[in-house]
Image (tube, rainbow, N blue to C red; front, side, top):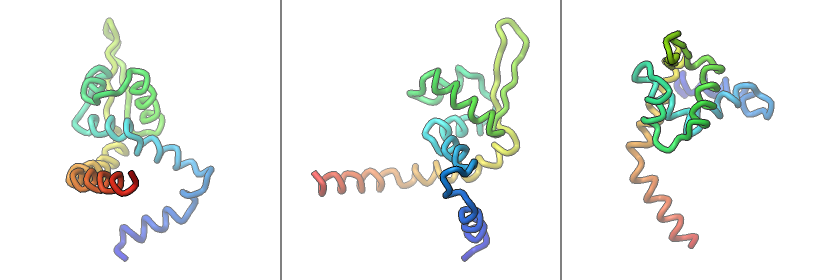
Amino acid sequence: MDESRKTAARLLSADTFGRTCPSRKVLDQVTSRWGTLVLAVLVTGPHRFAAIRDEVGGISEKMLSQTLKQLVRAGLADRSVDASVPPQVTYTLTEMGTDLATPLYQLVRWVGLHNGELEAAQRQYDARTG
């Protein structure tokens, strides 16, 4: 087993699978549809709220606001307010968020590369199960 798999196995064997493990909340936020997409937008640089909303098709303003609050609370994103009129709020990734961007990018890339196969598997399953 290579070193990264050993590390993953060690971390997962701690208490990540436990119902009360605090890391599960952050894992849920990061791997949610909206969390992943918002992080993927922020990896390209600072964005204002409206720009993120425009890039992430289908996200409501309420859900975007909740997602950004969760990412800021988790230490993955920063929120800065320019005291102009009206105030301009900008979101950026923190160092930890930037560190997360590499494996996140790999996940998004993998899904993109295998999208056709995944859709075909779903069609085959649906055809078998009626």
